[in-house]
Length: 297
Image (cartoon, rainbow, N blue to C red):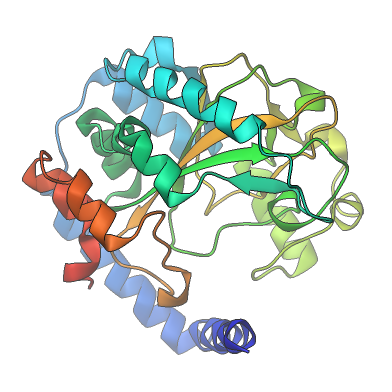
């Protein structure tokens, strides 16, 4: 009953936000907030600025852990490999189940995974993309089951959490076309498709998507283990292509601004008590990204 009420509430809020006057006022407030934050953006390298511009222009950038050169990536991969073994041993797959997430206790056994998403360099890149103080929502360790189910995040959608949503996806096994790559429709085409479908939010079947755009325009992010995908999932149609040849193992790191469009979409990957434990050696800025809801605007 609670889930039904949440869905109804989301629809109502979405409808209210689409009222021209409400939308106009929200646009003005957003632009003022972005302008006010310009002078507070962190200093980043020219290479990272180019990465941010590519995300803004194209919606997706594909790189690798090696190319990023973040020192803690070694601990990330070691922890991920250990957790993959435990995840692979889980054979209790229910009917119509397409994904298995690592549990909170499993993530707490491997804190390096969650903490990688709080690396200062990554936070700086994300903040330059979002252009506002950012919120870190945590890490999702996923095992996507190799089957042909087309449900949930395997359907086309645009993330509704915020005006700008950034996800950093790390591949933990080699991903080709048959291993369920992250797929997207380039940003300029997404706007046209959304207009054709009169899309506001929700999931779109692939068969429906193919009626308005040719699959030749789909872009698949393929790559070896260690591939990293920066995806502006609040501005592009995207999905996880259903894996067929083998299960897909990934970690998703999620970020938005602290000016949430819809509080119903707030998600935390770990309980508050675990966040407190993990935050003990973090800088003040990292803690603000983690406990951003305390100062929600």
